[in-house]
Length: 195
Image (cartoon, rainbow, N blue to C red):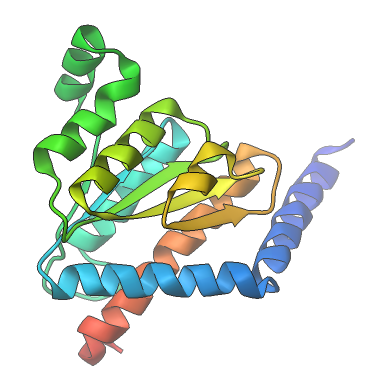
């Protein structure tokens, strides 16, 4: 396969996954529930707490910085934190195990008014599962940005959003689209002057 064919193949695959997602009413309804939950969180003085591993960790950080910084236009910052401070991760994984790096932060910082967002392309990341359970024990609503079959997280989060793709790259491409879109829905509700 030549280089041009690889480019075309990858773009066509991404478009196919996006089309599958955008034509699925159940998935769109779950996305709408995500928007409503995040809007409610901010209206009630809560914050968003996100986490994931690897590329999903990068997406969790991107999500938080778009809220605390800005999306497209200047506005008041919104409370958000991506779990995974390096000193916390090394301390907690050394003392308790890697599977507790996020749950310990949720237990320390979470409030029932907050919204937890766990990102996992497999839905089976043990540290995200533990953090979800910790969030639920506090009374937080939970969202899962997932892929493949949705894994264990699909069974335990309040709002599972499962990207219909088999590879992490395609799943994460949709996750970033979901992150940007949920932020736009929040801004349109809380900062209509920006639109």
